Image (cartoon, rainbow over all chains, first blue to last red; front, top):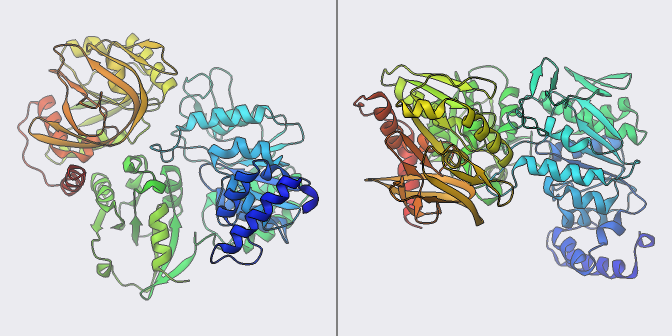
Length: 404
Length: 225
């Protein structure tokens, strides 16, 4: 790896490794975000140097980044360098790259940092999943993210391939400035952030399977598509059998396979390998708590929540929902009114987390049966697996509470 | 009661459907008939007793203002219709507001108030004193709103920024406006009931809902900061 580095880069990397060795709980060879920060402070171009002569895939979007990154890694095969812990800003990228010399790299990238990562890592492929409202109190409104992506992608070279979701008008607007695009026809039920056209603000008209605006902005033709559990890329059709639930994950897998196809990994091979992904940092895992089996589902924003609610198996089962509003969650829980909780009518929801009263108020107005849980010991015992939906820090709390 | 939710595709960024939902639920549970109409940007403004305006980003806010200037809203308010507006909706009702930089954009001039761009964004929980009650909510905007003499603010800010750090929103005989966005009426049951009572002319029977507990918790939490 030293052949990629300048002298300053080498010094920065030495300092980074010292920090890593001082950070407790670090396995051999794995990088840390603290180390990444130190490395970047000494040598701001460290990410550029560490990315040289490697094939890099960047994955960004509001929802599904971590999962799609894991699917790309599994589909690519052995020894792929990735920021598997979800540290998705430059310090996390440096940490991942310094911990592995693999020529194959997949980096989950925070939406706001995508322009920086594009410039620094010179990727071969960038996967753009979707854009929707998320943590509006601390992040920029979603249309300005689309503008920044568009501007950054317009400056990229022809050999960068953008794999982008054609059903999300904001993603299409952001991506179309790139020179080489592979559009994917991925089921995208959340439309509330692109009801008005990102180009001219007139209404976007949706017909079955397509969308367009009077200004001429319209859904582009696709090279990849999903139908049920079937993925078609160019003329090849592959039947998938993923271990993780939800139609949205078939879409994520299709985009991952389309990205890998650019790097000459055959879709039938990559999609088969993706079956090995069972849980990602606890997401989709079944864990144990006080003799109960808990199905851990992470949803951080309205689009993610809606997708998970739709993936719940039909029935009158209990659902546990945990909501916090700490800084990492966004301190404004108003978004609960953008989630169609009405579809939970007929089930019973147990309201958990620090903002359980915001949740119970929302459910009451939705005429959904609920119970506010002030004491966890009052939760019902059941032999069935309980579905737990939680937002970011609430999910972390439940990861700590439960065991594998 | 006929409620028109104005251009939710433009003014619906921050859970703004929550206000329509709370109004309709708190009315129907008391036996008051409610019809909530979603008014899309291609629709003519329908006849309604109460028009709801939500929050939105800069471009959509400008388009909503243009459409409303051409619409019958001003005439309908003059004829006695009510308006409940939050955030960008509040700014649109005034004489001018700022989007995309510091250029002033012409508002509806329904109320003599003016919004300029503040030096920092106002983001966080809002607590204000509205008459005898406290109002809780969340604000996220870049505006500083100045009321002309004679225009009454809706509340006095106890925590947060509102119009200018001192007052929040404004209130007239038929209009309520606040910077607390989205589900402010869901979180403040007394305010929601006040709006229903005023618009329908009914004396409302007391109603217990989950929101009572949430409201009490937020008031206690914010009052102690």
